[in-house]
Image (cartoon, rainbow, N blue to C red; front, side, top):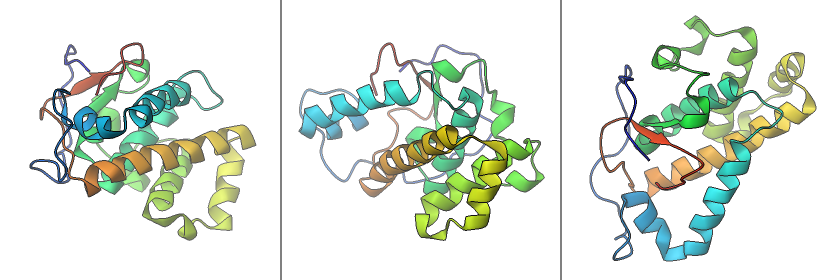
Length: 185
């Protein structure tokens, strides 16, 4: 990750602070990488999977990135809230996140609102996703896009939940850029 961008965080960052609940593997830099390095093959698989998830797909990168931030806020992952993906640099700006906690009042399209409502509910508990929600998604997204959005919600929400459960916070409270070409957390 790097900090080489002029963006300024506009939303207050929420979630746990302090040291991770598990000590990191000795000699591995970075809180997330150090804790996850206890299972190096899983950390490697995580980065490979994220490269596929954030690569070209059915779902446009703006919806992916807005959904990622909604998930970060819903779950309370500080790392996720302070991370920006290089692949989404031209798709979203900091201003796009300002209303992410109040989607209905925000300047989002109906398509974006449907996705954001869905991922929030999915992360709170997938059992709360209703037929009406999926019908709303189908008005705006193809089956392919809905599957991709669901995988994104499960993966981002799952890894964000690991960070929260194990109290893995960011190495810095500054904005960090994640580049899939150099996947280092």
